[in-house]
Length: 147
Image (cartoon, rainbow, N blue to C red; front, side, top):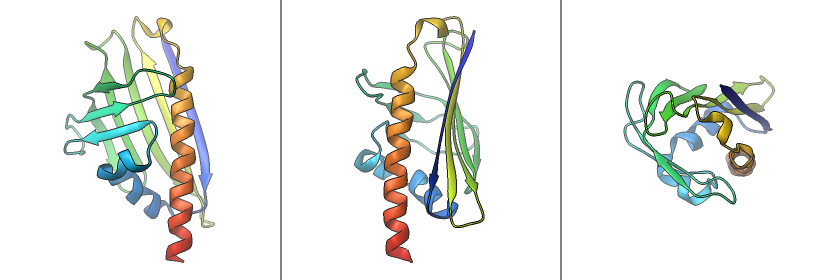
């Protein structure tokens, strides 16, 4: 079984500036209401520690493997609950430069595994949306300061 959550938001800032915010993992606890922290060497092939806190849900810490890290474009990882095939999630943070001073930020997750049907994904989607709004607010505030 598979399920997918997709969100997007247009941000009035350059993709490089948004990428800097997304890659400053030390500051996640200061602004990010969903991904509370990312720890470790965030490079392709490495295992990292991620803590998420969806709204009105219990937080969860897991150790995904970084699948892709493309400067100013994409960060993607794959995490599993207990063991691969039970409940897996491929999370993606992606930026699309719109060539007009704005950037579209995409956040998505593809869930698969035998337990997928048992999970309520609504809190996770709400967490994505809360993070997207905070990222937009922070990036646009910084954009005004730097311009």
